[in-house]
Length: 118
Length: 111
Image 1: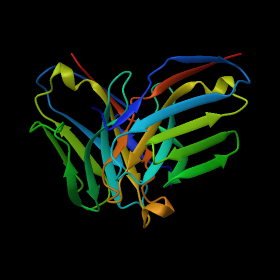
Image 2 (image 1 turned 180 degrees about the vertical axis):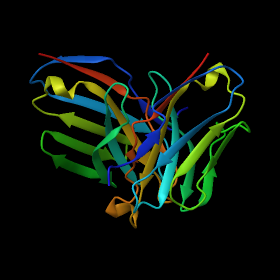
Image 3 (image 1 turned 120 degrees about the horizontal axis):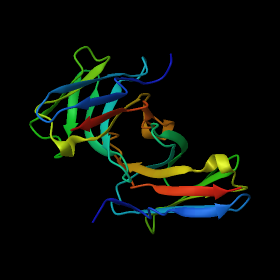
Image 4 (image 1 turned 60 degrees about the vertical axis):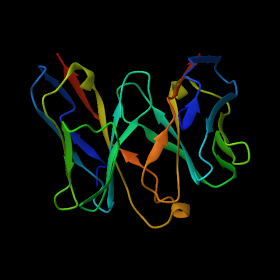
């Protein structure tokens, strides 16, 4: 297992276009998270899956954003009608195990997908 | 008020110095605490994980959690230029859903 993989690493698009990012988590992890990070800020939570169920979504996730994890394995994050304010690093992370004391909440991050909206 | 507050720095210290990085949080329900290191244009990588209050040591790194004052710290001993990075504190509650990050402290170790 090579860890969490994200694709593409960098996407440049024009305002109004749709973009999709893919995340392949660590295979035995049942939880998958999407975060957004802008320059000089920490990661901001967007959404979270346990297996294929999307259990929580941030207010940051407007109607233009949609995330799926159809078979409980890889996930996609789609942004429709991109705006310049969507320019950021989109980070995917996964976690697994049982119980907070065992470190089940430890997130392993991918390298991120950087979005530039012109 | 942000749920997790962290001084953004930047912090610059000479090689070999002891570094102290700190965060405060507002939600007393937070149960577990993490420190991540992030190099430029890379994803964060886990440094330390602690569950509840106390100290945890791993090599040159020591994490401290004081739940009474809602204060978490990371100490780096014998700092090296390779420690230059952004350090992120993170915390979450028992539900293990949303994990909240601080804004990160940019650290530079001068040779």
